[in-house]
Amino acid sequence: MIYSKVIGIGSFVPEKVLTNDELCGMVDTSDEWITSRTGIKERRIAGAGLTTSDIAAYAAKKAIKLSGLNNNDIDLVIAGTITPDMIFPSTSCIVQEKLGLKNAAAFDVSAGCSGFIYGLSIADSFIKSGKYKNVLVIGADLLSRITDYNDRATCVLFGDGGGAVVLTANSENSRGILSTHMHSEGGHDSILMLRAGGSLMPATHKTVDSGEHYIKMKGSELFKYAVNFLKDVAEEAIRFNALKPEDIDLFVPHQANIRIIEATAKKLHFPMEKVFVNVEKYGNTSSGSIPIALNEAYESGRLKEGNIVLIDAIGAGLTWASAIIRW
Ligand code: UT7
Image (cartoon, rainbow, N blue to C red; front, side):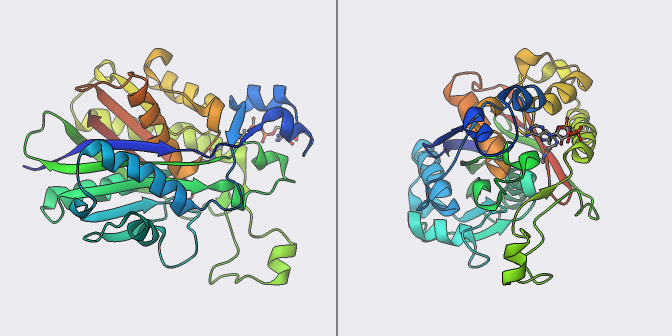
């Protein structure tokens, strides 16, 4: 049996901070509303010259360095993103070129905020099958580029950033990915989507003027799906591995809203001491959320070798997914 072991991790967020107080000067909102409804205090916003592939490449470079591998050792690049540099070529191919990963195949995964865990699951399957040995999995998004800063219901939520891990084939299961689970349920476009710019509604002056190139979200409807699906997919992972909730050393959920995180943790009977939270600093960074949080947990010493970590996320599609990793 072959297992996928995490041997490198890194993340990157742009320097510029956008605070709740600054947003109060842009839309009719308040620090009190944003903090009490979401837990978010600030988020990072990329400057004009920065692209998703830049964020991905900075994070990936750190992950590859930590892994001890050479760039030529990477055989596959998978990037979860819904804000690619352009519709094609894929952001993974652009990262491949930026980092000189000459021997790698590369493709993107579009699964909303579940993009990183979907990528991890695909990478794990390729490694288990023996097809690839060293896989770079990225989750990166630049949501500020598709956010309407006149819409107070969405603009307070989102930020920019990304992270990456390097997985390698390992013949022992002492460390590595123990399970992944992916789910989708189409038909929820009205809850979360970006309608224009594809084959349904190509870009025109009209689509630009009517704001169709921005995220549209029905937050309170999505909230209910989020809590239930995140609980279900976490329980599925725990059951699959014949574990008990108390066996999980750290729960790293998608960082969308502190109320979703707390409600999910409560349903799973996880004390908040076992839950990693950084939503206050970055808001919702979509595919970037889980790898940024995992990297901060690792760098701050909260995620130690041998720990059992559970990650889960939900996003546009709808998609939702989980993984359990023995770190
Ligand atoms: O990553 C996956 C995708 N995203 C999510 O998982 C997000 C899921 N949803 C959420 O996090 C929450 O639903 C939100 C934070 C988006 C909204 O919180 P809520 O408690 O569900 O509020 P709401 O949408 O029901 O709005 C309540 C009120 C409304 O006013 P009325 O109609 O009651 O008068 C809104 O217009 O709050 C108003 N409101 C705001 N007020 C001040 C909405 N946004 C703001 C704002 N500042 N920024």
